[in-house]
Length: 367
Image (cartoon, rainbow, N blue to C red; front, side, top):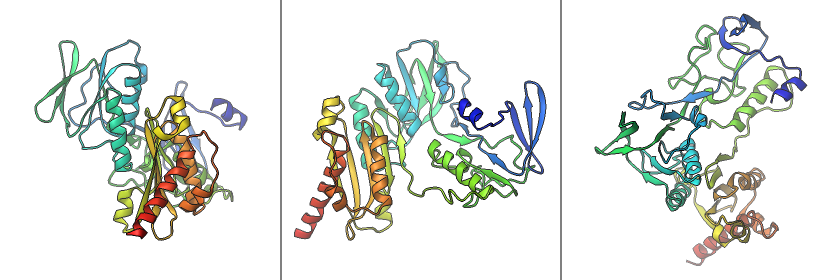
């Protein structure tokens, strides 16, 4: 990143920045205060971990997603509090390292933003890896006893672990950066308000990334920033952020999806058909030693157009782009079936998921 900034002759100013009126930014740096002024300001201050009530214990063994990377000593067990992407990623990584992991989830499933069936598959895979998942067990308190952190759980149980990771989400860094002084509006959830061009309520000030709320993906944040600057400087390159964004969770195995989930399709009243293909039946996945997971394709039953793709399995974050490309082009399950995929590849699973969806349509017609 530093080399790229230098190549584009970008001046990097280090310090703590705060907005002032009139598109002015005041930076408190190691060499004193510096005031920067510009025709355009882009706000992209990122996010910080959220600690739910009862988990704010100051303890060197109670960590969040910002400081978990600072671990320097081996340990035997960890309790991960949360059920979202960050919680799943760290839980699976620690389990792969041979550490006993307990995943404490307030709700009844993992990854509430993902397809429910895919989330259920992931939970089953996690359990097979030795991860203990406690659903419906919110944390009511956190204390330290006998030199170890202890979680008080809903229902009265206590959970002892060598380390605790609080992974209950993140919140945009909007506090203390001078938004009110610069007349930048924030909504009831603490998210910066912008229009389609990513402009805030203050003239000449734009925003991108986690401060705008979900999906909280680096890929989306970068694209938002590109669109904002194209709008700000009249560059006819990008007019809007892609509405068909692929999501990925980098746990072991990965989860990725694009388009509608089954619940989305049902709420929208879309008559749809589902096709599935298992990694266990794919030669490349078996050869690689990662036969866990599946590809799931959703198609509109009337038009056969693909409206969603969901994957849990090895390299799901790579495979999902084929689904994104298909949907952007308005492809049908017949188009996927007619496409020749290399064999052996994991991508071939997409073709067989389409075959399964077609079979479902034929069975429906036969009835």
